[in-house]
Image (cartoon, rainbow, N blue to C red):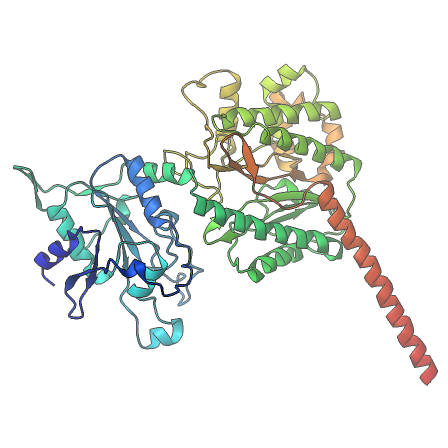
Length: 554
């Protein structure tokens, strides 16, 4: 196919026409019958398509350019190192946001000026590939299922990009430099009006990520439905764990019950590794070993959420394994529940999440002071010292969406998370003290909540032997405020965390999480305990009956 044919086919703009390859392999334009819509023939209700075009236009709005091409490759196929087996496929999330396609080896382009969203797919497979892996979806199947203006095989992509670089105005926007195609010579002469620009690179990686982050932060109605579905399945998984908890002997069984529930409901992928920390394991924030016995442990900190069509849920519950809190565990749970309840009530458009995070620390500090775990100063003195960070060592929450720790407006995905969330303690510690000293507050606006954002609120209080014993108690700055002797009673608790996913609404919030917590969770655990006793009595009667029959026969 020559370049002139490609160029003419790519510029077809009549919205009453479909552009498609002809039987000869060249491009042709076929008029759509305008009377099709008058047909009285019954047509089944179409499957709701992923709103790829809507999302692409959202990115265009935040990119704030009138021309150019967005070029995003999906995840290519690959195998484990030194192996002929591939890992479980996980699509690149930026690609998925403007496609909804969860297939490997695809590329998407969006012509900003022409408002054309095109998907480029591998050519049809054949032979042993089909026998082993099944046939790849066809162009016709993808057009019927997804929201694209056109679908074409990758064999024509190089020609298209060459045509674009020669002819169309605007840069080719890529997420990262390494994702730009390398097999095309772009050192060309481009005509711009009456001027010739020699050897100009058409690629720009400086703007797309920020625009896509800002677009992804505000969820479309379709995205919210996916998150709700993930949350509903996650809730059922949590319920099944609670019902079975009294029967279980090891953390791994908790993970097994949850993942089995999700898979049975067709949610085969977890948004993150299941965290089932019992006893002191609950003090490790991302504990995922899940391989220790539950016997003689007080609490279970259970953090687990599935995905539904690539959209995440994120839910944490902390419960007593026995069905009854100890006095110390109940006291800590009540503090964390108060932290979460009060912070959730502060959620609304325009609220600064940084301020809500700081409020959580104030509630935590007051509770710890009432228990005598921190002492030696007034509330203001202890707050300014930052002593609550020793027990609440992470941010209050994060965005949720295509990633469990999703992107927020602007910046890179590493720096744009909700204020206070970081995997590096130094980040939030420095930021916390910066706020307390009233420096940098105006230059750092925090994270301002907007309608249709989805965020978590996940306060916690932990008794980490490492954090407390090796860091804070060895620092004169903190040690003077922490009751070292009283800590010994609380170490076995490990930690308490409670987490829900919240949608920011026009005038407040909606809690998307329906997994039981508090008294409702205890009731389910103890109903399981009663069921266990009933089964034990039933098994006892069966054993006695068998014994009687055996004696009579003898």
